[in-house]
Image (cartoon, rainbow, N blue to C red):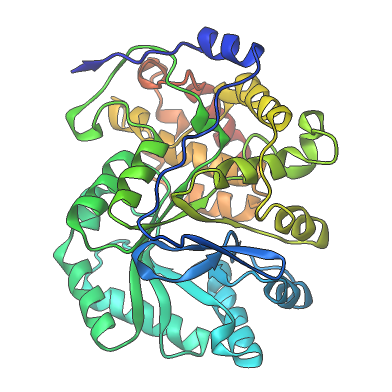
Length: 404
């Protein structure tokens, strides 16, 4: 099956040259009150959970130093995202300390469990019990599948049974998932099965760009959907949406000064752009120092200007071929079975997220037959990529940087 996509990169650049693309048309929200302000922070309704969470939320991989962590919460951030695997459980322990000292009602907590190896319902329950112990609490507000990558896992009855039991026991209030790759199939499966209250997925300014050419697609990859379409489909079922991987794309924060607009950094414009979408309840970011905290928190409630939008789109036009959207098409179509999507994600962790040690650990866990040395250099991956990403160069670079 083949699909045609309308806009070429040439057309994208032409629109950019004439002042940028139009702003989003806001999606009507299911609730009459979808947004409110308290102090210096704006809060949005997290779908059918009914929770109002801060537009800027805190990622726990890693958390900032203790004093800054406390200050971020005191400044109005009330949603913290963590996982059983972050910092070997120390992220959850730090959050547990916060809940004990500041009060359980100070923040909503989302933690996650993995579906790895020969997992089953009992493994999920054991993981959650460990998380509750480290968090020092009897329940989490949102419990999520971590990094769901297969639609069949999302709809698995064992996951449903674990969620049902934990909800019945009062150990989690709402259910969710995070998705790093293959999001088109995974998010649609989550929406269709009706079991998820919250979905966290990558959403950043590179999602403004339409695919650049006709590509071959597969029935199980559902054509040429875009992340925004998936977000709106989920929001249409009143599923709460958390945007992640919104900032650290195409380079670390300090390397993108040439895209600054006056006093507004590119990263601040990225936050504004993501929050233009009403279906997005919050953007989760990692604020590891005071400069990053001030940079991010200042953007709650701030509109994106026309000049900031133009600089954002210039960044996309100039860097789009170096940024993988993690859709999974190249990996699904690779005749050698190379884990292209995972490898490019680990390279991004190393180069753009400052997580070199974790990236090397993840890369070393891959089967060598799925890494760059096994690549036939046939170019199939790049023929499948809708955005012209230089996949082969990326996986070769990853092998050089992350192996050994």
